Image (cartoon, rainbow, N blue to C red):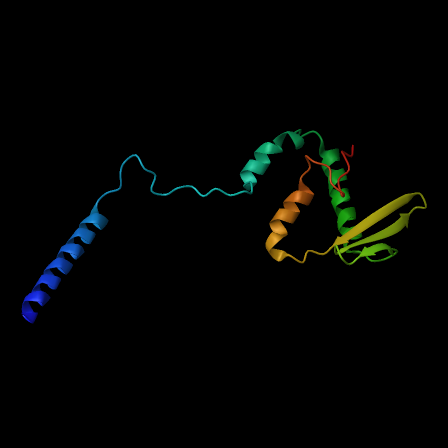
Length: 145
């Protein structure tokens, strides 16, 4: 009798294996997308470019503008990395923000802000929030022309 039960179990097992094989071998339905697109909350570089395309300069005659922008980038890099002449104004360790101020040519104040980001998993969210030119923030009070 024991041999009879073993044969039944093996027969049922073979039916399940055959049915499983048939289910895996069938083609997916033609109307369904087998590779769904991932939905990301962040815009792709192409989407950002298309959104801000109107802000870029496309005139080949404006080489002067390119020279001014190159000089502005050099000045920005210098002031971002330099520690010469900056005095600590406000240090808020709770927010991780330090404000430094430098007097330039006795009539221009340069404000340097050092922001420490401790939640590294939120880095992209914080950068997108600070870099959003559409909305004013504590760093972007409006449009500079």
